[in-house]
Each structure stands twice: as C-alpha cells, then as structure tokens.
Image (cartoon, rainbow, N blue to C red; front, side):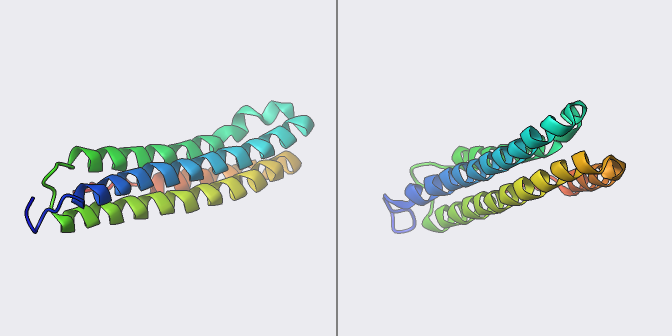
Length: 146
C-alpha cells in the first residue's frame, strides 16, 4: 500500500455506504411506523379513507431507496487502492445522505400522522393534504453523485 492509499482507507468508504443505508432505513422505518399508527387510528373513524391516506407511508419508504442508491454508488467505486481523501469523501456523502434521510423520515412520520388524522376529521381539507404531498414529490429531484 502507498501513502496515498493506506490499508485502512477502504474502511471509511464502506462506513459511508453503511451509514447511507442504515440511517436512511431507520428514518424510513420511523416514518412508516408513525404514519401507520395515524392510519390505524383514522381507519376506525373513516375506513373509506384508508387508501387515500397511504401517501406518507410511500413517501417514507422512498427515503430508504435514496439511501440504498447512494450506498450502491459508493460501493461500486470502492477498491483496495482507494485514496484516503476519496474514502473520506465517500464517508461524508454517506453520512449526509443517511442523516438527512433519518431527519426526513422523522419529519414525514410526524407530519404524515397529523395529516392523516386531520384528514379524517376534516374531509373538506383533504385537498390541502394532497397538494402539499404533490409539491413534496415534485421537489425531490435526482442529483448525480460522482
């Protein structure tokens, strides 16, 4: 091994890929669970709105897919001779995607729970919830990671 690529440099890249998967999966799991409890509570009052209220669960699941995509992109670029600076870049990318996925999952869970319960109480405001969900889906653009 050289000074640019010591033996331990792939460790940091693998930890970046792992962080992207683990933290985004935790966020997606929390968002799904929190939104699911809201759907379960709402289905007692208004069972006809169950399928319309599944949007937060789907949005939370997409967070885990983002983490998986970044982890695969990082893992495809790892070799035994990866430079240390590149390995730290992969660690930073994995941590940023993973921790933002964790925060997004928490936010989707809390807002989804409140939105689903609010939709059950005020059906006339159902369009407001749909509009905000559509705006969130449109704002999630796919940026390329090198």
